Image 1 (tube, helix red, strand yellow):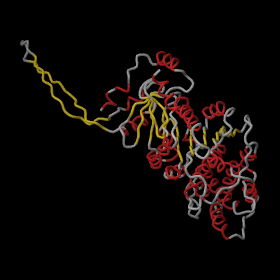
Image 2 (image 1 turned 180 degrees about the horizontal axis):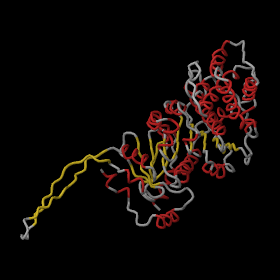
Image 3 (image 1 turned 30 degrees about the vertical axis):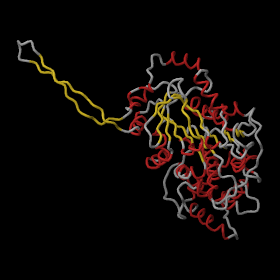
Image 4 (image 1 turned 45 degrees about the vertical axis):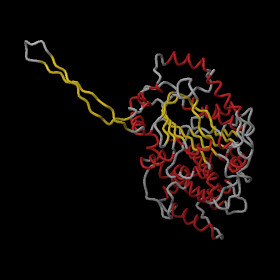
Length: 472
């Protein structure tokens, strides 16, 4: 009853300034007191880590969205938050679409199988900064160092598309169809020319990338063709390919929620998700331009499960670095630290995680990830006693004992702690604060069902919130 009372008090205690709203998300103990989060602090960003089946989607992401939907009911049209939700595994995004689409007209669902009657809002091309966002290596105008493997071709293909977009937006009718036409000219061996001086830089960059061997050029163009392929088919063609208002700008300016059910079963589909993500980053960062006259205060969420599948070097850190000023809210989830290191490298992984101020660690079987969170929790001095025993020579019956001790610096939370956490139990790390134990409920289970589940799967669990690691 206490839990229900806390939630009802939050629901009906309306506040005039919605930026100061607090969101109940997670509890300080199993079915305990809610943990509240300030709405205006969400742009600090969240990184959620946990193994398979521990509840990243059902207990954290879906529960957070359920709370945010309640917040929307208390916000004006000008303040209602917007979001791009990407889930390469589809299961999380599918639940959002199934739950929300029939009731929420502000939810747009994009799926390659056309199961949902999508709002047909056609796309235009954004401003020149898109080329910088898509060009992962920040090309300096020279051809890249030659290397073998698909990553070389994929990276160059993304760069070519970015510069083609730059050229297309200088035309009378900018669209992805125009980008496709220019790519077709290159595939047929033609060259790109323009009388517009603003096009010179993009044409020079494309020529530098295309200066390699015929084999490399053919592979780069084939990779670029694969990246554009999903956008040539319905319903993506009607949404992104033709001329008209830019969909993600519309989502940003009118507080829409954009749910992507686009399965990256092949590399070019993964790149299409990357482009979609980069476009969303772009329209949020547009707010920082001096000439921007639209709504700068609306929170714009980027929520991504299986974050490592759409992450790219340079893209995330550029957006995360200005998230607070641009009112962007990055919330990403992944299983293991090594997954990000494989994609971003160790240095950028450290940068990206450092920019996400709140980290939530659930049960994990990966020693490296658990060691990272153990170090993140800090160190404390623990008094460790040692007992020595002295025995008199043989034949005597007296044995002497002496106890000594010393202060030893040890991790506040040992790495082993994260191996054995029950479903929903987590440790919350916020910048500048002591780690906090938290429990997150399943969005589909009642308190009674939670108790039954806990008793069945995690019997005789202690109250971890009162453990020695969180009281020191």
